[in-house]
Length: 171
Image (cartoon, rainbow, N blue to C red; front, side):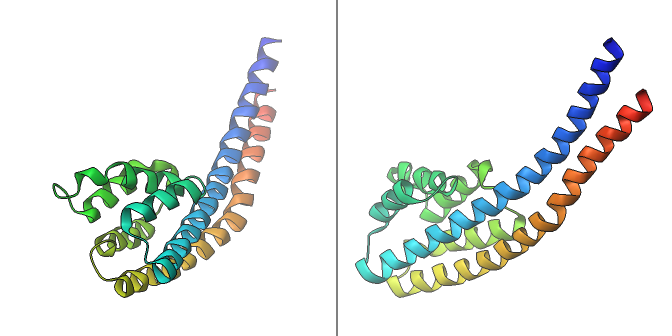
């Protein structure tokens, strides 16, 4: 009986690892999707309303989906540090502090460069930077969706298959 319980736990653990890895790929896609949507909203705000940076961070913190909302909320909550730090530094701290974004190196680089432009240049320059960052994040999103579709099935099959293999070996 104890042996059977161990086999079941090993099977469940292996399957859980595979399903967890596939779930992380899905969460990464959703994170990139909310970030691109938030950048599009920021671009519209700057284009049509010329929204000041504190108000823009407030709006995005309220309206963006999770986990992108936390990036903007962190920036909003630390705007009082402007003067001691640049907005770019606050932005990078928010990027580094938000692990739920599940960003790759390229996405971090793109967003870090965007932080150096936001609040620093005129509205046209900021809109251009938002468009460029949004376009690059869209490309990253497409690659992440391909990875999710291709690797998600592989991770799930590996987890379930290795769990079944362990069970057969131990029985």
